[in-house]
Structures are given as structure tokens and as C-alpha cells.
Image 1 (tube, rainbow, N blue to C red):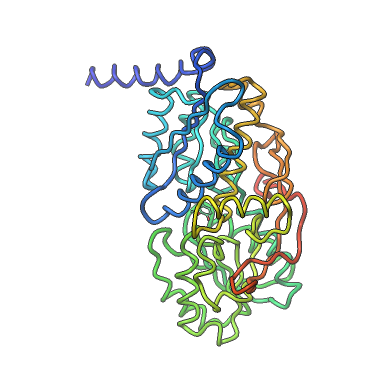
Image 2 (image 1 turned 180 degrees about the horizontal axis):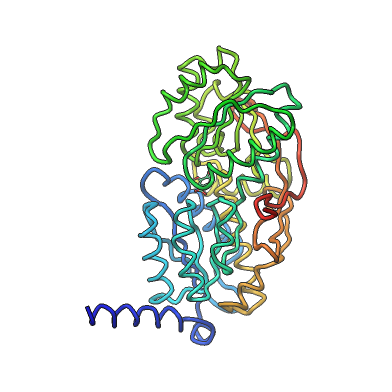
Length: 389
Ligand code: VNL
């Protein structure tokens, strides 16, 4: 008992003293990138790692005279593993910054480590609104579900969709997507006769889709984490929901660029709202997509890749400004950054530490024989609606 307690306080003390001074003397600037590289959410890890490596290839691996070391670790999408790895990276490797976080529970499990050790934690994927409130050391470069949800809640009723059933993965981002879509849609005169929640891992959509068919709404609104959309799309068609005249709408996570092209014609016409499409029409994005595809044969960058790429940008610029700093100084230098991302203009709000960016309304269309989310409208500079509650 006693031995255990001593050991525990040792670890705690080590975590607490790993800050500023010791790091300032080292000649490496270390980024601990924790991602799901295996298991059901491996595509998120692969996209973010590829984007981080691309950023380094384009911007060099020294910053303010220090060598940048990227330490990539696989957490298999298990929160206790993410937390343990974060602790090891802070205590043993003395990383300047923690980054990655493929899912909300992984980010939430790690937030206390960031707080105790005063290590900036750059969230590149997870998107539940409340994550930035879990630690003052969190900076987010991904997005939030409420940003996308309210935008679609405004668009849908103006476009003939008055009765909509919602279907979301039953955890943080799904609950945000459901709540914020529903509130806005109902405020605009829409009707939500049923809200369905499916398990986050290996969901069987069949019984849920049957229910939707019976209700026969104008549309089904969906949020599922990146990688799962194709299965839903397939069953939506197999069960004849499209033939029954039910439209499919949702957050851009369901028409994720990583797998969109493999979904086939059933995806055509699906309207989603999100902050990134690989077909976003800007010089910065065209350059990003071409370089990403060149470095990673057969892969198209999705919104996860962009969260990782922009996260590296935020880290590099803060490292430059603080001459390879750490702790509070590094965190401060991350706040307020404003730049042009492949997604469009992007801003890290210094107050909330969350991302402010455009939300685009897109429709899946065929372009030169390939499926893309074609942006046709934009709501500019959207702050996280979750922060005003
Ligand atoms: C989350 C949100 C994960 C959106 C996702 O894919 C996503 C999350 C893995 O916060 O857990 O597309």
C-alpha cells in the first residue's frame, strides 16, 4: 500500500516539475503526437500523421535553431492508453507539446495531464464543444459539431425539408450535433418527430433505418465519426430509403473525403455542412491537396488531415515566437493566430482557445469521374455556438 502511494506521488511530482527551465536548455523541440493508428478509427490517425509529416517536409525540421522531433504513438482509440502515453511523453520524453486526439473521450482523458504539467495540448481531430473547457492548456485546430449543426438547421427548412429525423453516434460529438441541429431547426419552424442514437463502435444501422422508413420524414440528419459514413450510406440505399424519397443530410463527417469516392452514386446529392472539402477552391488548398496526394499515393486529404496540418502550423509559429519555448509561454503564442488554411481563413480565438472558421454548405457531385463535396454556399467566421451557453 505504502509503496504504491510513494510511487504515485513520485509520478505526480515528476509531472508537476516538467516545465519551462529544463526544456529551454534542450536542443530539441518535441511534439508528442498521439493518434489511433490501428483499430476502427485508424484512418483518422493515418490522415493526421501524413499531414503532420507533410507540414514538416514543407517547412523544415528546425525551428528557432532547435531540431523538431515528432514522436508518433498509437493509442488504439482507448482513453486509458491515450492518458498513459501522454503521461510518459510528458515525464520521460519531456515533450514541449501534446497533439493529436482522434476522438473526444481520448482528449478528455488527457486534459488533466495537460493541466497538471502545464503542457499545451493541440486537439487536431476531436470536436465536442466542451473539450476546450476541460483544460486551459487545450488549443483546438479541428472544428466543433455545433458550428456545422446550426448551419444546417438554418439551411434545411429554407430548402423544403420540414420534417427531419436525427440519427447520431451516442457520445459527445453526436449529442452536440443532435442538440444544436434540433434547436435551430425547430426554431426555424421544422419538426423532429424522432431522435435516434446508435453505438459509437460497430453500429448496426438496420433497425434504426427501418424506423426512419416507417416515419417517412423529408430527410434523415446524420452525424457519425469519420470512417463510418460509407456503411450508413450503403444500408440507406439497400433499405430503399432513397427510393422512398427520404433525403440524406448531415455533418460533413458522413461524406468524409477519405472514403467518399468509394461510396458510389448513392452519395450523389447528399447535402452536408462542414469547414473543409478537398475540392475547396483556393490556391492554398490546391497546393495542399496536390502535395498531400503526391506524398501519399492513393490518399485524398480529409478534414482530419487539415486539422493536423493547421495544428502543426500553430505549433511551429508558436515555437518560432518563443524560440522553442514550452508551458505557458508556448500556449500564449498559440492563442490568437490568424492565417489562411487549406479550409479558408482560420483563427484561434484567444479567449476560448477554439477555432473560428467558415462553414460551407456542400453537395456531393461527380467531378471528372470522382465524387467530391462541392461547396455552394458559405457562412463566414463561425464561432463555436457551444461557447455562448
Ligand atoms: C469526433 C468528432 C471524431 C468527429 C470523429 O471521427 C469525427 C470526436 C473520428 O470528437 O470523437 O468525425
